Image 1 (cartoon, helix red, strand yellow):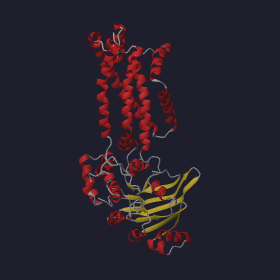
Image 2 (tube, rainbow over the protein chains, first blue to last red):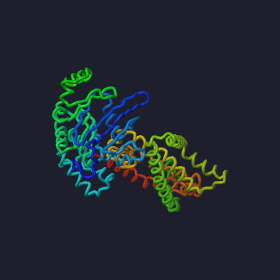
Image 3 (cartoon, rainbow over the protein chains, first blue to last red):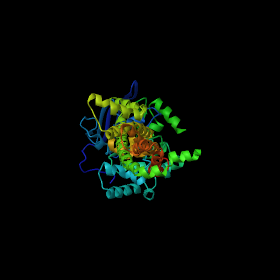
Image 4 (spheres, rainbow over the protein chains, first blue to last red):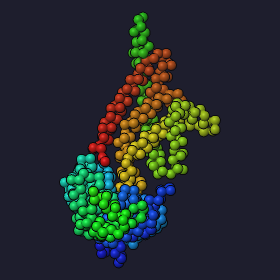
Length: 255
Length: 229
């Protein structure tokens, strides 16, 4: 259920194709022409200092933030088209947040079923069946009836992943999924992300988990000052970066 | 005649009570009816205004703020009197019940809008982001994610406002509405004795005490779960 490859998919292997993305807030230009192209099944890591535009870039990819300029194709569909039904398009793009952003008034099951029922219009029974399957994928089937306030950070984030996953998106964007977690809880979330990758899920993750990037990422992008400074495999970027600025940043996050 | 006897004769006169209590009781249905209609109208209108305001469009927000600030600052009695005695001058004659309904609904809506709005702004912005990212529309997000959380904060002040505005139905007696106080006033005039006011007060307690207790229950019901992140 995770990898809706094949049926009806266009021939091209590019799943996300964002080009020349710019975003300004009044006089402040946060993104200054960023290209983010992600192949089907690829796991891309986005690193960069805080304020470099990582969150903004991810939010521009489903137009939670409106790009000031640029083109945006998701599985061949032009998301910047004036005729696009953006709510429909967003189902294809899962999003996971640093602060989890779970709905505190709903239990884990309710968090996952809300969009299944209201967006996909599934019956309560079907929505709950699918939500339970998805919660099982993040190893939380026994926490379905717990409220966010009763769950640990790691569990909350896994519910957040399940909420995105249940809509069977083509790609999941994760904005620092582990940086609000206590160190001992990071592993459980990274474990789930690794399993998603093995199932072929396409993901873009803003994160500084370098060990994880080394073992799981296909590509690492270094974003600074609203532009991609450098990109390559984790090995290249972390150990033999071409740009001095990249090496300097990598030095900083190693410690 | 001792002071107590004088007091009892004026306020606790059984003779007067026996004569007029049924008339005053007839006012209960008016108070309850107007109260229910005003609460339904005022709360819905307040919610709609707060929802429109959360769209963040200046052309919508501005008139809402003018309405809200105007009706929060005017005394309800002044609004009632102006509409009742003022509008006929421009050819609009409204029955006193309608004037009472419109005035009190507008006042409740103004306060309710502010209460709902405070609740809405207290919800973390990440909730909008998360909900919209799953494809929920603005309206769905508002109804299923934002409002339930805003309600938690809004319910206690709203129940207070609701109780206050229902008691203000008594202001209708100034324009001839025969609610509990209106009936008590008539009986007072006819009997030249204050006992009808005592009876009216007793009816108010019988009517509103359960409401106050119920509102406490409601507040507990809305205190769901543990505070989220």
